[in-house]
Length: 291
Ligand code: CUA
Image 1: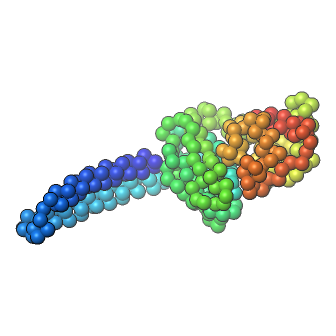
Image 2: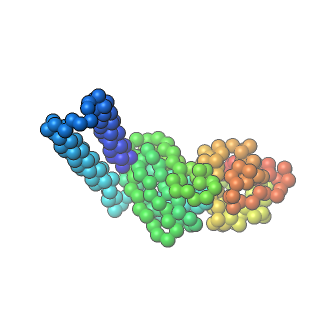
């Protein structure tokens, strides 16, 4: 889909550049002529100009229709489905067939049509991963469908493309296209319950998580945390970033994020954790182990 749009854009840029150069040259030639020149030659030039314009515009119309046809693909009925729900300001990602729930990172198998079912929990967002295809709105009252296919493996970055509040620009999404084996392994790992805490510090962190408001908003499968306001954290440590691309996922950044989210991303629903330094360290030790 992205290639069809890019090809069309290059065609239009090329034609536009040629027209610009030719018209500019003719303008300069015309400036050297007398204004009273109304010879038949002059009229032929006008007819020529109208004719060329019509031909170019019809050509662009044909190319546009061809691009639109190649973009509107029907996915095969057995195609993988991914539900994406926009939130201010992060992406909930669900795989209904396997029950996997994650956030801000979408793994897909390479070379296969993937059906994205897009919706929103609050305002209008727009799903846009430029290397894969065009934009599609996420609306609160209906589900939009977008079919995308990655032609090669790799990581493709995108961002929300519809202004949705002050942190609209920090609503990043990453699509990771990988071979079928790696994808199935990822699904299997994400399906599993959270890793139990290793060590005393992390165990204390789990208890703090469950005993605080963290658990009211976040889910960690395999524990008693079943909140559904914020992202599912079951495999948080496998995600490269936190806050939808706001920070890289390191223990230090996690600490900053938990203690002072509003300095980093003003307006997010998450309250700053009111815990001591030792307690924060325990919490981060636990979260960092959620492979
Ligand atoms: Cu979500 Cu802009």
